[in-house]
Length: 112
Image (cartoon, rainbow, N blue to C red; front, side, top):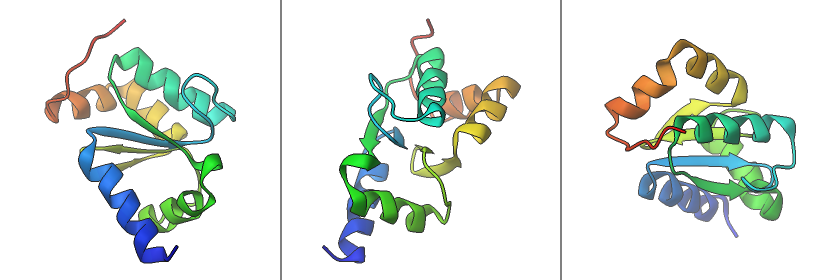
């Protein structure tokens, strides 16, 4: 598969879903602490999200880093915009900025 095709696959995922989390593992079984933290933040916010297990697809794992120009996973996208990794997510969540971003994007929430 070519890089362009991987780029197109990532673009489609990011464009077709309000919230996308590229992560190691799945929301039910995260495979690293950072991915686990990212899932926990999204669950606390009460938002639905599409998750992509980069461990199951090495092309996506490498391609998403090129796509975002960000060297690590997890990576969060909201309405097509790259937000950051778990550290940035935590900072934004604690400051109320992630909640504000999601609400401003018109994404429905079911806070727990």
